[in-house]
Length: 135
Image 1 (cartoon, rainbow, N blue to C red):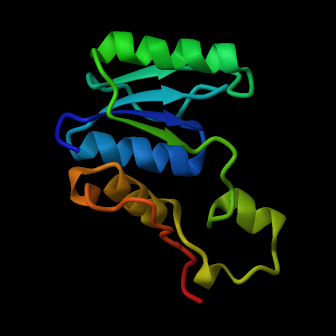
Image 2 (cartoon, rainbow, N blue to C red):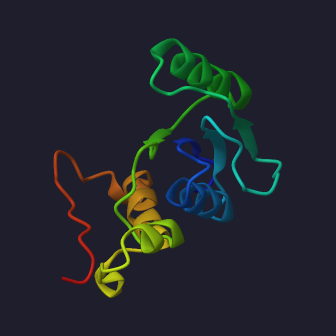
């Protein structure tokens, strides 16, 4: 991610947190956007924009504009808000009969998401990249 600026919506959830933390660990700058505060520790290259109702276009635009103003640019917008079909403690509790040995973890999915946001994916256009676990 080396200096790339990414906005991660849904940053208070397991997948958003995994994406934001992985981007930071790889040298990225992150704007965490969500309705609730994230559980990501403060970092010099991260701002948190909480209390944002992403179903309200004006609030979403204000958050994106604030991130761009803070970092001076944006390289990627990663929309995680509302994603839920992966292995988490909450999903395990709500679906006790599911076979989670085949489900993708938030960290595995974050790897794919950040690949697509990276320069390594510059030749990938108009493609579907199924991430369906161990089926």
